Structures are given as C-alpha cells and as structure tokens.
Amino acid sequence: MQTVRSPKRMQRLALQWREQGRRIGFVPTMGCLHEGHLSLIRRARKAVGPEGRVIVSVYVNPTQFGPREDLDKYPRNLRRDLALCRKEGVDAVFAPSDKDIYPPDYSVYVTEEKLSQKMEGRSRPTHFRGVTTIVAKLFNLTQPHVAVFGAKDYQQAMIVRRMIRDLHFPIRLILAPTIREPDGLAMSSRNNYLDPKQRAAATVLWETIRRVRRKVRQAGKPLPAEALRREALELISSRPEARPDYVEFFDPNTLEPLQRVGPGAHMALAVFLGETRLIDNARL
Ligand code: AMP
Image (cartoon, rainbow, N blue to C red):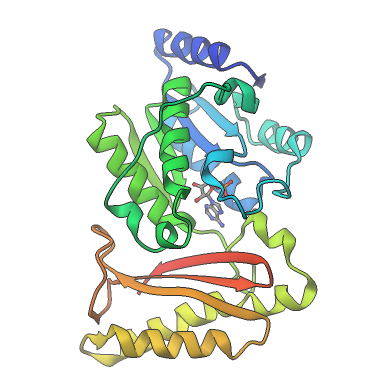
C-alpha cells in the first residue's frame, strides 16, 4: 500500500494505473475510520475487482466546516487509519496537507445550487460548497472509474451525483448502505464526542425513524408530513439530552419536500446531543 501526500504524485500514480488498464475505485473520507468506512472500501474493491486499484483519501476538509463548527477538534488518527486500510487491501491512501490543497491564494470553488439549499445546507450554509469543491478536486487527483459514498450522508451523495452529471465527470457513483451499531445508532466519527449519557440518548435518531416508518407502512394511505414531523420532534425532545435541529420528509430523487408521506418517501433528521450534531436518514 502506498501512502501519498503530494497531490501531483497522487494524480501521476492514478494516471499511470489508468494507462495500465486498471480500474480505479475511490473512497473519500475524513479519516478516523470505522466499520462504515470499511464497508465502502470493500464495496469499492468489489466494483473494481482484484486487479483494480482502490484509493482512499483521508483529509479533514476545512472548507466544509462552518466558523463555529468542530474543525479543530475533529478526531484525527492517520496511523490507525493507515493500518486499517492496509488490512483491507487498499492500494493507496491519499492524505494531503491543507497547504497543498488550499494554497494561500486559492480562489476556485464548485457550487451546487438547488439540492444544497435544504436540510444540511440550511443548517450549515457553506457546507456543501466545501464538499463539492473538495470532491471535484479529489476526483481530478484520483481519476476514479467508480466512487463509493455512504447513504449515511444521503443529501451529500445526491449532490455529488448531481455534480458528476452536471460537470460531466466520467465516474459512476455507488451509494452504499448505512452501517449501524448494534443498538441502531449510525456509525460516525462524531459519535466519539458523546459522553455516556449522550451516547445512550443518541439511539433516539434511529428510534424516531423506525417509529415513523412503522406508522407510514401501517397507514395504508399517505400521511400528512406536518403531523409526522410534530410526532418525531416530540419523541426526540422527550430525551433531555437531545435537541432536534430538523426532521424532513422528501422525494429520494429530487430531495423536494413532501406534503404527504407514504412508503418509499425518504426521511432525514439532525439532532444535537450537547454540542454534538448527529444526522441519520432512511427510506420509509
Ligand atoms: P466522513 O469520513 O464522515 O466524511 O465519511 C466518508 C464517507 O463514509 C461518506 O461517504 C460517508 O457517507 C460514509 N459513511 C460515514 N459513516 C457511515 C456509515 N455509518 N455507514 C456507511 N457509510 C458511512
């Protein structure tokens, strides 16, 4: 496994692999890898085959954090990440420095202007501009045939899919399922921030989704989104440690909000536990 720091070297290596006819699978991450990330790496390997090349990027991208967010305290452990990647048979880990990715006079950004306005975009106004910018740069540096994203960040995956289409990147996006802890909490590097009480209360995200899903599936007809939202917000707020940010029901393809919610609709929510903000989503 190669550890690559320099963007130029990464791009040269990827172009070399392409010239040799290797298929390249790419998994972008911010590191502090957990089973969710590892499942994406395995999915990438499956997509490119044993002769293909799997590249994982480990980069905590500053432009996707807001001014009052957790950039400085975001967990970093490159040594552990490298060991995990080696064990998974990754071919290259790309771990660039901030100064190589964003030199002081850096001035080009990629923005998606529709899907980015809602949900995460409303709560974190500059977040997706950072995401699309870094992902476009990483695509250019790793030259992948396929890129694997987690359904955990569903809106992000849909925005990247739109960027791939609208900017004509010759890349297939694979959406991989959310990996959960045994009690249902979606795995996330940010779960590390939770104290034991908050960790216990964090199950409320998945409990809320399951409660709404059961209700929607049993109803036999679409239910009003407003009533479902109210019920979900109440359930979340019943935990003293939890403070809801948003609960949304939307069309899984367009991300357009729904007035009425039936099976096949998508639900997403964001909840604060203390300072820590967690998200989850699922098809109902
Ligand atoms: P992150 O390191 O949090 O930026 O995530 C990198 C990639 O891993 C993104 O495509 C995420 O959607 C994905 N990911 C994060 N957590 C999970 C999870 N629990 N299950 C599946 N994919 C995940």
